[in-house]
Every structure is written in structure tokens, then in C-alpha cells.
Image 1: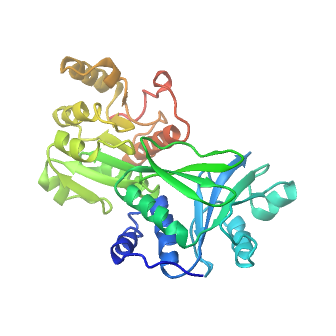
Image 2 (image 1 turned 90 degrees about the vertical axis):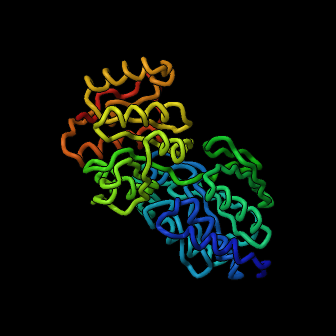
Image 3 (image 1 turned 45 degrees about the horizontal axis):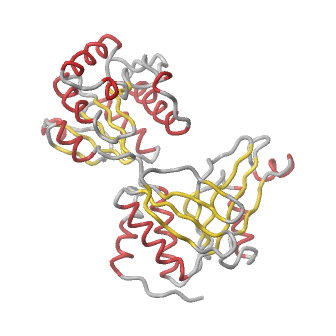
Length: 348
């Protein structure tokens, strides 16, 4: 088992990104790179298909080292327990991609702890020194908040990479598997306060990178929420510098129309995948009129999710935060059209 020496700077970068600020993809790529640097041959497992209920979606990854440690997940734990036993027994050695299934019967579902009727199809590949280059490239891309598309030959394990303009769903045919590595989802909040603190708490638990922007230095100094990156600056500057990203969601929470409008004018012209604003239905109508008079197009205004969040009758800060994170999750998992966009969510 051999592996060429990886540069100290690459390993330093990989280690730096194995902190809690990691996305799952960053953590898994770093795990694989560190294993190869230690002259180990790790395995990368990808969920390629699900039938019925599934604990994890298609495209989910887990990396296993030969010492039995893992990063990532493809189930609630029982599948991983069996997988590592089979891996260590040498069942899936070699560069070729092995396609296997779990939960093909009711008995299997019960054995592996899968939901009733659930079935997982997994692609299992052992990596070696030839994979170091593509792992380095993919890791660099994710760290720089780019999407890297990976195509792997199922017969030989040969991997090819190319930068992608957007994250695309996993695809598989008889000979190749196509999968994307992407950066961590970023949530940019404009306006420090109690709601921002509640929202940050939930977002961090859901693996978002959270940035908090405010032009009031005292508000940032008095922040009582979780540890997040705080950005002092005018709202439009903060959005321009940190929110022009297809993996970014931007939400204004300041209660000050001057601040929110300035941020929204910039946000609605960025490539951010989600833009939301706190406020009641009446506040939203007034805000849209102001933004329209300031020159924003109807296409831009139609991107705005306001009142922000799902309409669940939320009143407290944590309830509103739950409504907002629920809407983000709904849109990430099953994108809906502008016509079906919820417009009676969290108010103030």
C-alpha cells in the first residue's frame, strides 16, 4: 500500500478545514486526503439510489479509514456497522466501484434499521495514490466555494473533474457515476438581535455557515447568540462582499426599513439562492412599493420571500426561526415555483 507524499501546505489546508466550520463534503475530502497521506487506502461510499423512505438523501457520502473510523453517514448507523465489517474483510478492495444494496426485503429493513419499505443503493470504492490529485482539486474548489463535478468510471475507478456553474443532482448510467462536491451552505443575516441569535443556533445545528452583518458596532459587541462570524459594515456592502454566492441565503432582520431596503436592493440582484425579509404582510406590501420605486424590477422582487418563513403561526423568536429554517429546508429539498412561494410566514 503506497502513496506519494502530499505537500505540507495541502495537508495544512485539509486539517484547517476539518474543524466545525466544515461542510460535510469538506470533512469527507479532508478525511480521504489525510488517510492517503498516512499511507492508508480509505473507502468512499455514495448513496446512488433510494427507494421508499431513506434516512439520508441520494448523493450522501461516508468515508471509512482502514482503522474503522468514519466521516459522514449513509444511514442511522446499522448500515455503516455492517459496511465497515465487510470493508475490513476485504470484500470491496480495489479501484473498481462496487454497487450494492441494503434493505431489499422486509427482513433486511428491520435488520439494518431502515424505514419500512426503504432501500439503499450504494457505490463503494477504495481509493489509492492515484486519487490524491482529484481529492486535492475537489477540496481546493470546495474551500473556495466552487462546485466541482466528479465523474467516475464504475469499471476502473478512474475519476475526472471539472468545475460546474451549479450543483447538480447525482446521475448514474451503466458505466459512469456523476456527482458534485459543493461548499457549505451559507446564511447571511442582516441585523443582530434576539431573532438572529435563535436563527443562528438552528442554522449552525443544520450545518450552515452563519455570517452576521450589522452597521452598529455596539450591536455586534453585545451579541449574545452563538459564535458566528460577525461583519461590521453598511448592509449593501456586507451583502455585496459576502452574499453573492449561489450557495448563500440572505435574510434581513433589522426592523429598520432603511437598513433592510439597502440590503435587499443589493441581495435581490445577487446570485444568492434565497432572499428573505422579516415583516408582516402589511410591512411587506409597503416594502415592495418602496423597492419598486427605487428601480428594482418585478423579476427581482419576485425572488423575495416575505414575510419570511413558513406560515405556522409562529410568534416567539425561536418559533419564527423554526419557520424560517423549515422554509429553507423545504426549498433545498424540493424546490417550488415562485407562484407557490409561501407569502404569509413569520411576521413582526
